[in-house]
Image (cartoon, rainbow, N blue to C red; front, side):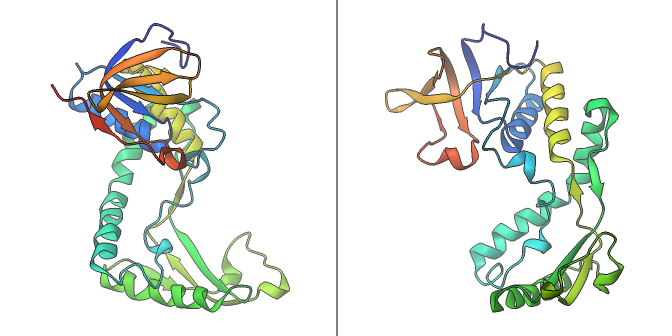
Length: 242
């Protein structure tokens, strides 16, 4: 069915609020687990305030390490979940290649450079210093490089480089192509993606029973899952008890 044009959806077994990376990947996973489930995704196609379409270079784990990342047990557990998720990317991209728009590449680079320059704060130095021990603890490949060898890197004189390392296994994807590939894959598998904004979660007996849309329609649901990034604040994902 054409993306965003289905006006006939009135109910879902699982309704997902949010059509960014989290919402679309969740829909794909749930539909794959049980093809008989009626999975529906709701979100505006323009994704005006969505982060997913701009975050293709922010998928790395070790490039995001700070001095506090591994300081606590909770932080370490959270970080290791990210490490395990990172390992799934190659297989995930291979699965999506078939529905990539116009056969465009989904992966843009296989490595990343972390540069410590003179324009930042002492915290930047502390965070940079924390990345290398983390790489070593988790046995990730890296090397110290001369920033002058990075193609296209031409900082201002007042942003001179102190140190630069290359992360050999931490690249970037084309986030917009990933979202498009997911939408096509879901459409082929019979998952409607409704081009609407959810204004309220409907409840019955204190638990979610559906949603009210901006255009006045309502959709009933057995499970409502919220994956709407910053707009998720104040929402909750609950299952209607039977």
